[in-house]
Image 1 (tube, one colour):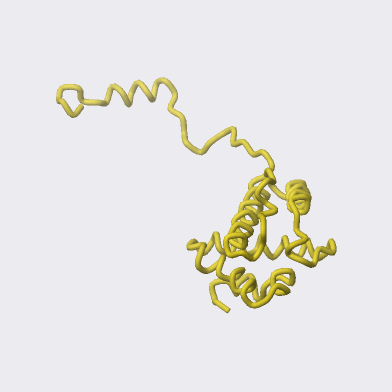
Image 2 (cartoon, rainbow, N blue to C red):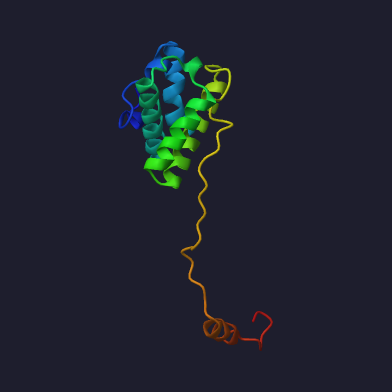
Length: 149
């Protein structure tokens, strides 16, 4: 298969492979044709592999058996063990992957579509805020003698 995906995924997960060559091709096509950024490709591939391994450990063997409750349970468990941004990224990866499989007529519906991710609010940004003295100095530095200023 394509070298772009083989870094993380060497074969289609069993539930996908069980549906045949077309489903396996569509699975790999998602990572190669649909995702341009190599970092996103690697992160999404890792997310898909971990989710399908999680499903296998719980006895879910068919793609058609995957439901929103499975995705919800996985994201809930992940949010307890990892950070909220990690869980949100994994959920985004699953949503996009299942959308791709639905569009390719491999699955009838997207089981991740209705799942809500964990809440994550950034309270303090990285952008520095000027104190009033610095703001006044910046405003006073503007040359108002010209139209451009």
